[in-house]
Length: 483
Image 1 (cartoon, one colour):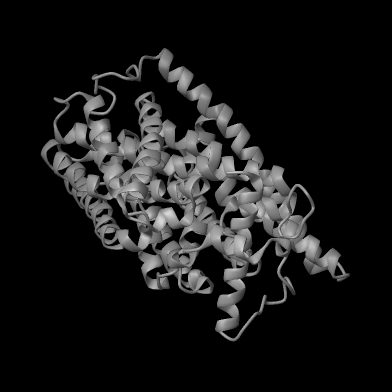
Image 2 (cartoon, rainbow, N blue to C red):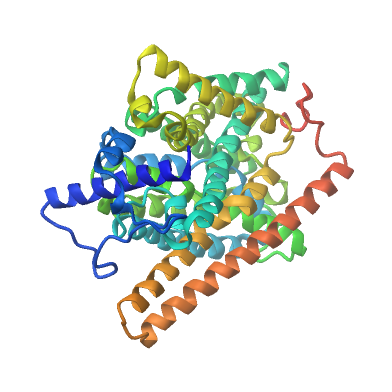
């Protein structure tokens, strides 16, 4: 789809937001932006100059997405966040110590909540914002749009691939390593492909409710089983552990990944009946996630000591481990599908439009199946080439999650505020300067963490390959996944 076509689609989103707010009797921006900001384009033409009929045809049907209440989004958000991250946290605690772990998780969780609120503000205070790439376009035009499109898609794909990888590991454990690993990955992606045909979160909501239960049950079972079997606190635990620089960075990236649901926040906002209620869903979800993550990492490290492993379910006895891995599959496949649906909501209308997206006739259904099938086949090939779990989470964090969870929201919020002050001739008071300096500093610190973390993860992976800790890619060997 050409850039002009994308602008027409975003123009429709702008007009849709305006119509909805007028219908509700309000057009307020809470003091941040007094009027809709025209999105930039390569020709310097404002959005409002497009023909109304063209705008309507390009985006017709997009309003059908807005069906979810904040309580539903709260459960879906909790399902997406409370997953892969907690499975690696006990091992993280063994690297940094239980004191460093608790402090780091609470601080990262609070900051992740703050940046989540920034994302909501960017959506509700600027008409036409639908995805990260729309914010990039608003601030920096075509280049910003394309850069953020790559980062945004990478973040969503990390969620998809990570959960698909966990599904393969889980099924390998259920079958006690007796079935070729390649087969399990094919099964996982076939299930994801089937559920992706549901197309919206509204159609997936009941499956996602069940998915939340199916991550809490296995992890809670592990929290109960390990202390009962160990019968006492481990002797080799430390409050603050002195690990090498590389190991500490990888551990930090794993903690960041635990709060890395931000790549899907704009998708949740797009399907909410009232996006301003997203903040309530975010607060409840993050409060649960922080409490749950701290409990899982702390308890399992205290009783498991340096012998903790990732995924955490490997600490269970053999029979119980196989049962719980079977349960967790019911969590990982829907969450992977959630990311797959998010990618398709952005990708499919670029080729065929929103009318085709919401149409279930044989022709449009065939197109949707083709595009989703190609996207998932490419994803399957990449996941097959990744023979490690914890390091993949760290790799995904450095490539996309750190940027989307911490750096990008802070930077975009600061840029938006700065331009608003300048455009309206408002004085840069000490309070405003403090916010801008803090947000910019935080954004650049996040960028430094992402770059340093990427180097550290690559070094860690290379070192583990040399030590023979990984099996080869595209193999039936399940040694790395079945303890």
